[in-house]
Amino acid sequence: MLDILQIPVLTDNYIYLLHDPVSGETAVVDPALAQPVLNVLDEKGWRLTYILNTHHHWDHVGGNLKLKQKTGCQIIAAQADRERIPGIDRGVSENDIISLGQHQTKVIATPGHTSAHIVYHFAKDGALFCGDTLFVMGCGRLFEGTSEQMWTSLQKLKALPSATQIYCTHEYTQANGQFALSVEPDNKYTQKKMLEVAQLRLMNQSTVPSTIGEERATNPFFREDSLSIQKKLGLEGQSSVSVFTELRKRKDSF
Ligand code: ZN
Ligand code: FE
Image 1: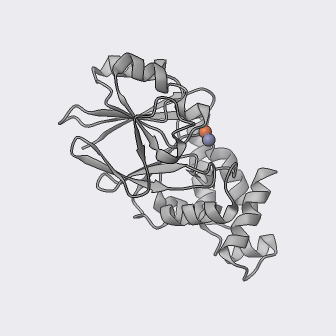
Image 2: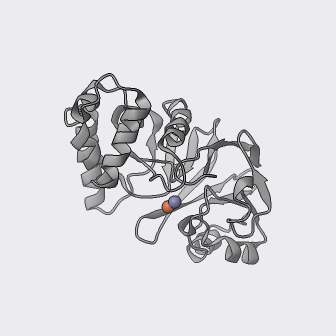
Image 3: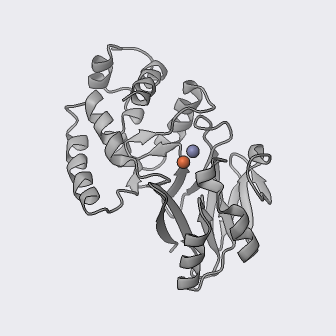
């Protein structure tokens, strides 16, 4: 059993603390800030072993140096981001395995949002920490990659088992769902999910995690093959990449 705690920080960021009760090892994914993490570690009596970063943006690495200084943890991030991620100790790339006690996570390279973005897949635990690549009913903006790169990255995630839990770094679900419905208004799963999301947000509760299966049913960026979406965009029968490109373009100005 891997304990997973979600810590909401800033306007809409989530930091994740992962703890293996057997070995006592603990990792934090994308600490935007150090203090909220230190507070939870203190409360729980956990010692930080690793920081796992998905990409170099400040709202994912802002707490790196302070956490390292206070806890002596090791910082793991993409080798290709060595110059941009503060305090990095171990550079990793696609298919590298990191152990947290008996739990293992595999690195998947997902360029698109940034050129060196990576995600962490705990296959046996059915958990994916996907940073700003995949969001609930959405995907990250293309700051450094082409839409073809992002599409390829998302295909890797779409192929994971349906029950895989999606731990993304931002609470963007409601806005994403509004866009999803605008391009696929007749999707019953999205309609139903948006009612649940509205309830949760009303009570200021998190809508994350989702699952790969739910994303396949509702996320337009996983649904380029939907005839309804293709018709709405006027791209019937076009390639998945061109439908994806148009979706991403429309979402940018939605
Ligand atoms: Zn980002
Ligand atoms: Fe971010």
